[in-house]
Image (cartoon, rainbow, N blue to C red; front, side, top):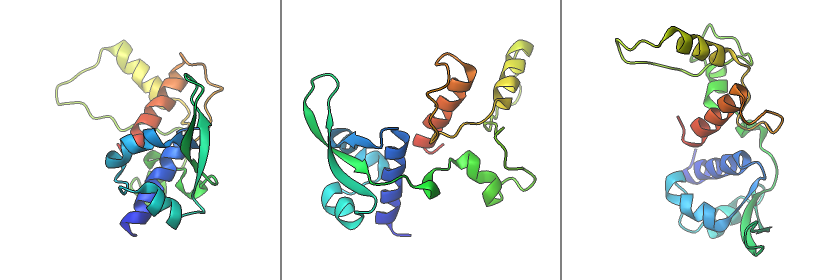
Length: 161
């Protein structure tokens, strides 16, 4: 796979995680280096992948000004999987069944013990149904453990953990 195609996939995943599937160019430019994007995104990715991206406008919620943005042309089902969801598919966990109860890998240092009540809470939290970071989670109560698990998955997905 070419570096340009990898950059295209990373940018498409970012736009999918954004929820609105479009982001102002000034935000994308700030993340260019972190995502390994080419210097000239518009001239490179937008021109070479018109089936992925389009130039569009978004309104700034604070100032009301219209800004140039990059939008996703269409949702990419093949990219809408987190690493945790891919593990059973890729064979990383041969005995694992593809389910909606995927726990986060957690490794504590040797000799580190959690209090019983904390350990019980972590086990309950791990057993909560998994919601992909690409799914709409607006139905979750913002203060719920389920919303926290979804947010952590978004964080992990974005930073490649």
